[in-house]
Length: 212
Image (cartoon, rainbow, N blue to C red):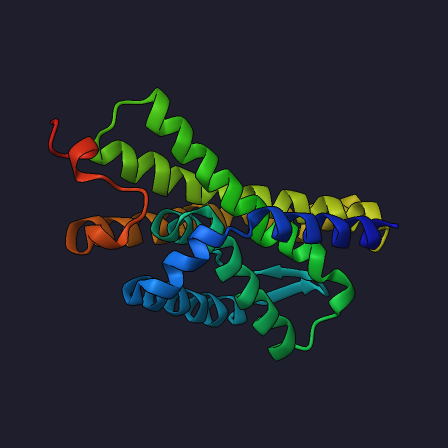
């Protein structure tokens, strides 16, 4: 039943995320194509470098916060989707768990990252350092934390592993992963908005720099 609901949720997410205007823009702009497919390839490579504490409980960096800020949430979801499909094929993962890994490892991190960005944009001063430390650094740590919590919940509900086993062998690693994940996203966005600001979908010079 868990797997059935997860695939229904997966199908609903993909259906609601698909946008003809975004697709048309992607097909029209070569720069956006390069960024989208480049990010997809880099995510595939990054996610293929992972350690498995127990089967299914994989530990790896996400880098989805930067992907969301560069591409926007819709394209970030599909970039993560294609990277995840590639990893399931490459690593010969059990496809029964695909929807669960998409929800916990792609959808949740992208939505958490975008929610923090939106809240920061509307509730905090629009400042360069706010964008870097809140939207990139803090959001990166929050994204991987939510991913690991949601995935742990799925595995606990499935009955495959006891909660204590998951906590002692998987969730405890969040302490080690949160800061490097935050640094990876923070540095990626710092480089992007300094050298390639026109590539960053969520950064506006007139909002974060020109008014200061």
